[in-house]
Length: 231
Ligand SMILES: [Zn+2]
Image 1 (cartoon, rainbow, N blue to C red):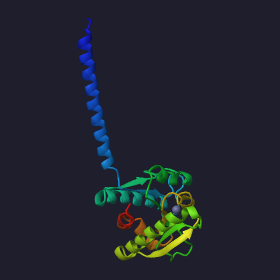
Image 2 (cartoon, rainbow, N blue to C red):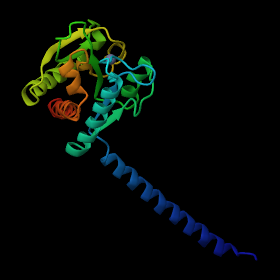
Image 3 (cartoon, protein in one colour):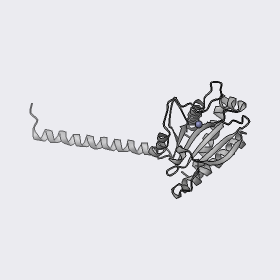
Image 4 (cartoon, helix red, strand yellow):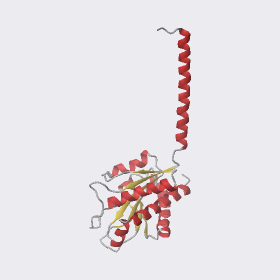
């Protein structure tokens, strides 16, 4: 059946109007998404994983699991207390992730902070407490983010000691690959949560109380840092 010229024009006009309405709806949806964009993004990197277990306490308890539990609890608490802060995890399960891949998560997500989680080991079984590491460098390009990393470290130290009554051994400098490869574009810290070589501390690290306590202290520190730095 043929359609006369006028009818087709009318149909075409209707189509154009429909497309315009659709286009408007799409752009409104995009605007809504923009409004919902997080004001602050933190990448939480659970150290080790898969065939790389990290340290252990000789009782079948491995560092890689505690790092992952704490990372997941940080995301859980953040959703609860500060949903406007986006938490990106470098791994979601017990898988191996090369060190070089980890900082890329901060680059891709344009993160405001990078926190790598680890647990410590020392032949001296008495050693205890958390250590907060920043990259040991005098590189000019790292200065700005190093300053910010120290700022986060001080907040975390205060929360650990005063709110959790947990020992901090201080903010220390070391040449860690994940810090070296991230500090130029994001403030980055590596947190040694505690010592697997210390019996009492290993039991705490491997308990719900320990995992949740440390996760909450880190979550609250990220929240305070995000406010203090106006990100
Ligand atoms: Zn480790």
